[in-house]
Image 1 (cartoon, rainbow, N blue to C red):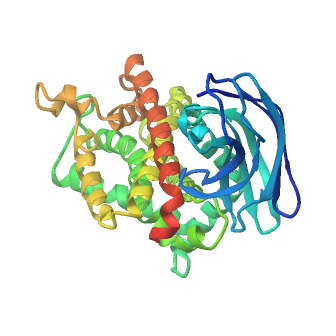
Image 2: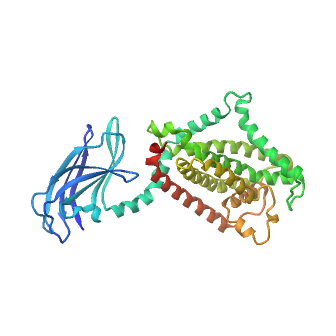
Image 3: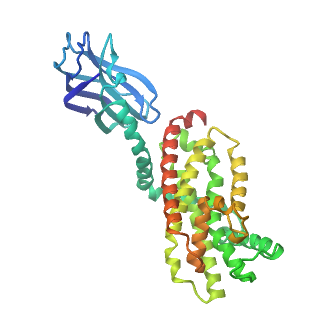
Length: 401
């Protein structure tokens, strides 16, 4: 089925009314008998059908190649939300033409208490929109994060302040918490279990190698561990406020990064004391920090979206994080991996991240270029997939919570 639209104009009044004027051309080989022009309303993100809007007759039979000038006007939905309208011909015999593969005038609107705003308009089929949404969902999520970056920083600072508010140490715990945690692991593995690295069998050498892998792990595990309950704990943001809820995971990521930077400063101070200075290669640290942040954000978006429906997910993730910690050479040297199994351990993205931190801070062997490029490819693909899942599930969060 084929239809063409000419001179299409879309206007939204301040009273929440939409007017579409255009010329409809029958580009098919069929005669349209009793045809009309109308619109259907769906939720923009979930694509759930809501209602049929007004319609106007196209007057008589529309033969192949013929056209009609027409205009249609009606009220937009009264409740706040993001809506998608399909303006399309319909006939008693064929039904809505856009549901049969024909293109429609697609109008996306944002309705709130102050009226309505036009988000985008165009001429697409449902299949073309599906392909377009595959690329637009991640872009829109990242654009929303960037547009609200100031709010994210503010909320991250509040998150850190609220974490230790009322305690005797107050903000000092921002330093003490990672320090005490790293010292505990160091005591268990370095002193009690006497783990050592072949390149430097001293206790100080083990401490540096261990902490270089532990600092990024702490930020990663903290954010991912909080993700399943992020939306459940902040359900008021989802249910009562117009708030970009994907920002919650960004806030947790930023708060964990602040703790990670404190741990990095402590580690650099220790390197300076034990080795006389921090190597210049430390300037390459962002090369491994960027995919770490992307992976953290991707997992956080995925787990927070699924955590709305699976309330036991937090317990499962706690176990999986412990398992992943011991599958990553952080508290033991890479050389101690069982022969033949090391190739599987290297498929762990955090294996490359931990190795990269050690390489640039302790001048160890740098991960191969192929493994770094693969790490970036996996990180970007993970963000893309998680954004698609999050956007797909987000319209139903409020119903479940």
